[in-house]
Amino acid sequence: MATTKTLHQALSELRALGGTRLRRSQRVAEAASLLARLLPPCKTLAVEERAGGVAFRLHGHTENSVAFSITCVLQHPATSRTLTIAEQAVADELCEGRTLAQIADLRGVSSNTVKSQVRQIFRKLNVDSRVALVRKICP
Image (cartoon, rainbow, N blue to C red; front, side):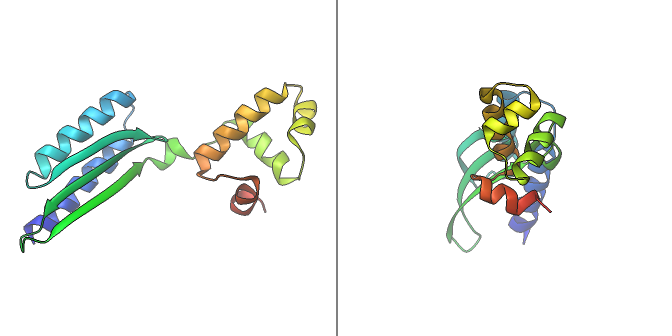
């Protein structure tokens, strides 16, 4: 049971680390250090920054010598899902079924600006298509 409690503590601290305002490289270094300190029987195979969070892969053995491997991506919801005012306006227009060119004309910006905003919206909401976006946020 001690292993389960230690793992739970490590995940709680990693979640808290995901919400900090540290630079990406600092978060990755802190996560690797935290994993090594809290889970000494586990080997950290990889730690990297992904889409506003920290991804890590652990390998180890339970008290019964059963091998395990776990991969997690910890994202802070406040930083990964918050749309800017401009992104929210673009998302609303996408919900109305408008094209990127129509949105650019309505907003008085270039179509490249709208494309960039759409990429950011997809990343923040963890979707990969307009259909998925509409299903996720449109009324």
